[in-house]
Image (cartoon, rainbow, N blue to C red; front, top):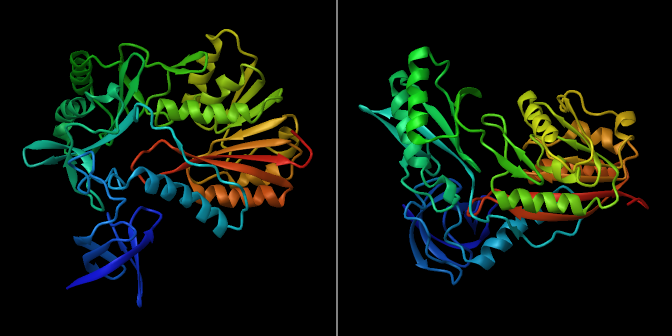
Length: 412
């Protein structure tokens, strides 16, 4: 049965939220102030009709919007969009009891995302390649995506051709395509080990597609050119499938915030360092100790550091910081610590930092909830959270990143 609702505000995921006598109802693609007709199922409402649209509603830039699950917010004007994303940070910190000034949202989309993952699976006699549909495991075929960087213009066609070569296994695949300075870097997951015949077929495909590198599950099938990414003064070849910030501008923006927060630091520990986007920039003025659990990422960092002139000393360590965080006596050797953990955050490391004498901590986070938890630990240990800057690399999605700066009282 249809029900008419008035949308009150936006939820964390971008859904319009209507207040009812039976609790909130979440309506995807509805905006505050709109009167909408929905089919209701518990606390979810499927949008049927917009009876009275909001002034903040705009036309989507992609014909697949609402079908493809990649974007949640193409229908919001700029003012509403920026306020919604910033409010995610404000609300989460307030709920955790963490007080801090939150800056305006920084747009770090730039030319677009430099990495994309396509899903592929057999449907009938062929391989279907695309993105996951909204709130579904169905696939939506994608010929072009407006949020991708120009370097990924060929990515849908590349993913389709490679999936066709792998279709005989009948296994669902993930094909991660990254734009590098030297061409496309592709890592395939889900297939399992490749035999000699398949390796030859994939090598021929990489030649035909002019790929820089092709790998499966992180194992290189063929590297025709080193897939380089510029990080400060360094040119880095990340490990196959290794982590990168979503956009080139995003990496530069976050790095600039990290470096500017530590103008006088002489020795910095870069924890969860990846392949070194912060390490290389920090090393222009300070000695850096980079710590990362992935051996391949540390190897990429070390190789690039050895080939780069004009940097102070960079040392590195492969270490699982979830199980073996740096201890107080190790941390106290540094003026500052930079953290960039995965979504789970860095609770164990935060507890050690709270007991340390480190003057400054710069925390880069891709999950506001785990950041708020760890921030509360640091604050309880004597740090002050001087400010938080929200960063928007994933335009039109609900995803938000941030940089938080912590100082011990009287220390800079």
